Image (cartoon, rainbow over all chains, first blue to last red; front, side):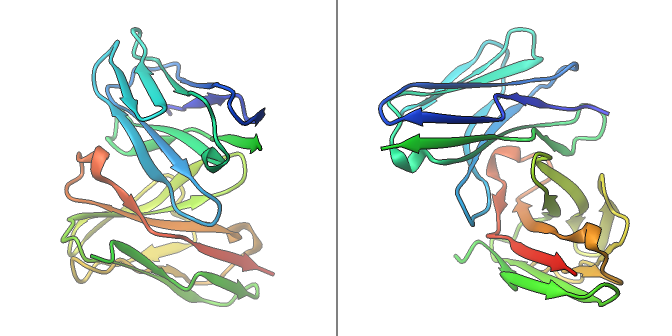
Length: 111
Length: 114
């Protein structure tokens, strides 16, 4: 079945640094979603992308829908301690329409 | 709006016990789903429902049952708990199946099976 692979698996950065993470698949996705999960909570949607090449921002977060439709990227600028959490990419399977999630990138920010 | 609520927040079971994880939403969403989250594996779909009276299996349905008698509630039943079902369980809802950008998750139930 379709899978989403996220990298890196984890990141430990200094406050103020920029962060980049990505999500790749061997098959095409027509929608990309980026979620953040804070400790002890459920995931919350950050950004949704619907068109190849699309670049969308939400505050200090910017996400891009890859041109090949097989990848997506999330950047966080000037990280702050409250950015800590697990970031998931997700997309609906072209076969079933059900959401598939990547395994997540865990971000830790040192003040 | 309370959004998506889940109870209990924590639960410890012994192997072979049964229990029901509760999920409710007050947004009149047609689509509800259950996921489990295991370290390094993201979220995997257990069961889902596109409306009252309609349920279907997801990626990892074995050992779990669901029913949807009302729009608001979507309980997940473990008939005979096994250690492999130790996980964090999330319920989610969205208005219709394809409104992916409007999916809301509950706070989760952390289940340990001894």
